[in-house]
Image (cartoon, rainbow, N blue to C red; front, side):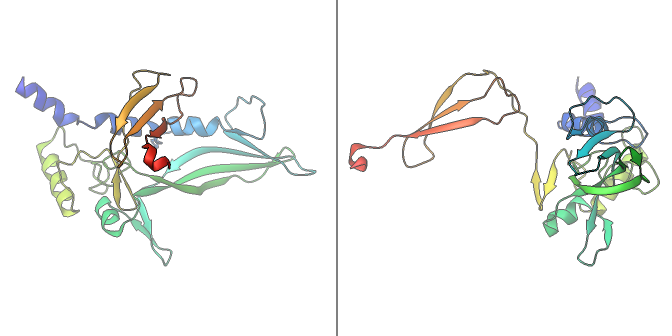
Length: 245
């Protein structure tokens, strides 16, 4: 049994579900439609018409005397970088972002095509539209076995030599080889996504909270009709009659 457990955790970690979910969402670069690409291509702004084609998402601008439509597709996620004050960029590492209180993130780029009265203009390739935080040890992380050794792809789960080399490279970058990752670094602080299970939907939960000086009753309710809504809290503080006077 011990050998089975050790074999399992050599390939998977306790945060494997976090890493697998993030890797499944971000673009892969092999021309397959990722979840992010599917979201981009389903964008419909300024119109309710159903458009089924390969031109990407549709944004219709409200412009007088002109019919302007922007089509977006091919979302790309670059390597994690840091932009300095002088405008220069260089690859970033989680440890540098921790020490400098920066966000470990990558530039997000997309392709745009503008249609003016039905006539397309020259497509704009790789336009940066923002930045996206990168999960540490994910497929896009600079510490991943696919990137940490430059052009060489390491296979630490199947090769003892690659496993030792990967650990040495992690130590050189100030990282703990036993750190499983699965978290983000936002303004120098490690942040993790917490999974929450709603065991009693649309039910009121009452608990006594004594974190304040006064006795507090906290009522919690999750809207069943809006599963994406945050938990609603209503607090009732009991006061004595002398305080009311």
